[in-house]
Length: 490
Image (cartoon, rainbow, N blue to C red):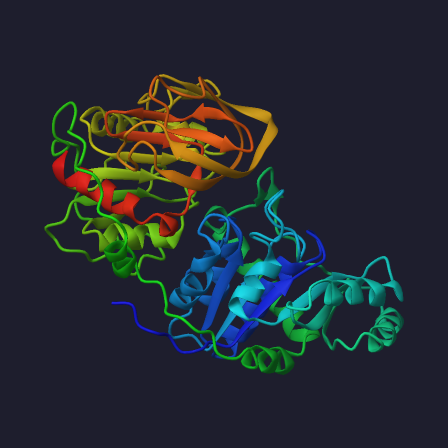
């Protein structure tokens, strides 16, 4: 049942450009507020999976994404209210520069658009390391560009000295935007990164804890926390109701009749004593015990997942359990379907390859016709090999690292009836990888990419739906119901 949610004090942390320090400030602010006893709801604009992991570490709550391209502008406020239930304050970290959105789509998916949809004040994090009086012109331009975006304050980052700070403050007096923080240049927090951004929390837990603590200390020392909280509390009411997985399924069209199973039942798949908890972020891990068991890959190699996916699977009647392909040699007891999301299998290719018992179990389950939904890293895991190392061999394809980054939003349509979608189903997705799969599509492709270029990609065979495309199921909740129904009948 979808019920209206009370208004939540909220802030959007944005910047003129990437690299200005908004992740450090946003994560540090979340942790500093949580340390003061506030229940902080963490959010990230855009499709990024990694920053929300640091947000979760800072707040003790699952980090949630707000992506107006993947989910549509109409779902931004409901998804925000869903994540912020029961919280004292919400902090939303922006993406890229404040006004940067999907290429060729105007303001769509920009931080500015999300701030307007949330009726939230913006705090602009400015890298002041190479400027003094010019900061006033920069801030004035961002304030005046779109009058519907309310910039309620500025945090100056990488400030060199007291004298530098005085020059910056004097210049900003003429703009009329309060300075709510000054973070000094010395001792900037170092968070390891690699080819796709920050190193995920799951790969460096102890170091990540230290990094978040350092971020919190920097924000606590340099920012006006009372002023930031007061600004958040002035955001006002946000009309509408919170998103809810059960309600989303109830309002979505019923799926077509399930596809027939191919190759026998999944009930013979190897079992494992006991079942782990649902993946982090799933608030519905206790579906009916009569529901099919859907195992979701996790651990350090598969960290890319939206919390709403597990919630939708559970609301559709599945019992959602987690497994770690790096550590577990068997699949969970009674598994009837697999969801293998994104991550960094290339970093862990040797360990994934060495876990031969699990590779065989996955291949056996997929060969039985059980539904398997694999995105990006999951696609690589199902291939014969990755950089010469044997993997599951479910797909007659090989994968390798590439020097080329494939990145961007995609407009796609399902080409083949599969466990996730009926042919003709339109979705919006995102690609983000430095690997190549050859061939890029099977005899029955998963998706036809309609924009920005026309091509087919991915694989549909038996119950397997494998693709590079990351999608957000909140925008098409019927895919979760279709997947669970296929698990029931396979």
